[in-house]
Length: 504
Image (cartoon, rainbow, N blue to C red; front, side, top):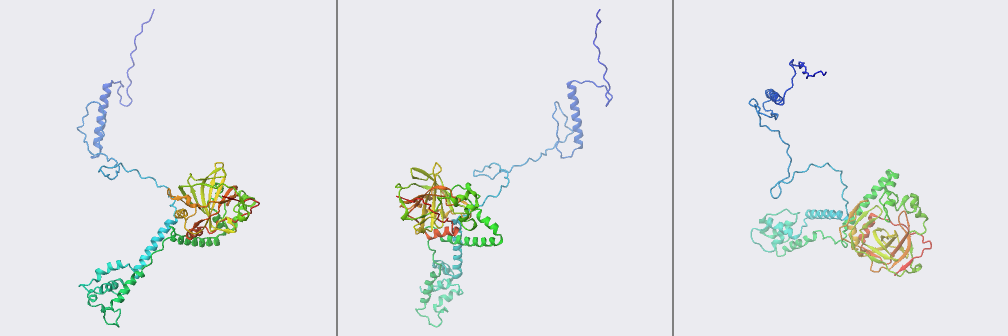
């Protein structure tokens, strides 16, 4: 027998603890209606309590909402404005101005060259000359006449002899200006010659004075020496004197620190800068050539090497050969001028080379020494240029061009024009201004020997070729370099039985 089962009715809802009403479930339309009533009640309460000009936020619901008691407002929050750039040429606005970038670190000042200093000195000298000429009344005749005619022009036509007298009177600042009627009355009224009666000879002193006016003007400046302005030479001289005085003052205050400052300069003239960038060496004193080997272990070759450079060359002891000439493959090139503290060095762009001893060597850089490091037949030249080359196998070959006094050299003039005055600065040369063939003489016979770098670390195994015929530099060009580097030449070293050959 099976017992029948009936559905059990749910228990009656318990009363709500908040309202006391029984809790019942509502349908979806009832929930919408309840939500609508609550929204209207909340909106009415908010409207009654808000400020008069406060914007109203009305919730979005389904159905109709009675907004009769709501006072809307048209006030809109101010939108942030974006600054725009000024109108372009066509009248339309450009894009919005970008935000201001954060300030960056101050850039290093641009290197100053000798040409810039010379231009400033020339402008200053011209201004001083003009001021002196104005103070002395030695203006050009045309300018004096242009100023004198409107002021002291006679009221009536007068004899031609009175015109230069009038112009001379106006151009002379020592005498006060005269009224026009005094000038037109008679030339004898001038107090220039009170002991003589007015006659035809009266205008002669005036004419003489007028002719002397141009002579009082400063003479035109003499043309520079083949483009090298002598103002630059005087400028560097003044800088060298000021630097020497400063060095003496620092040496008196702190000698040890001064020794360190003098030696902490840029890379050497030969070889790689990174190889001995921290080397403290110079050309004089405790850090000079006699003590290079004591400064660093790597410099020990400077003292114990058997094939060191430079060397004394004597024609009576040279050997004939090799017979091959040097094949120079030089052309106008780009580059940059560096003042590394030891010399002026020009780093050359690739594309220049020499062919010698069945090998090709690319030109890396060239630099200068004052006086020449090489000694030929007991003679040292005012300067020498070392052109440093390197082969693909790492072999170094240096061509030494002796420099003597004579005509100015255009290639040196170009380098000096962009020469940076301050140590450590680099100035880039404009394209095509450096014509390397101008550095070479027409006669390219040479001396050949094996040697070393002439600066620390004095590495040996360098092929040296010293051209016999020197190239001329003007006295101003040599003097300019000498003011910056009075002595940057290593003394000659022992031959130690090395042969020196003459190349054809």
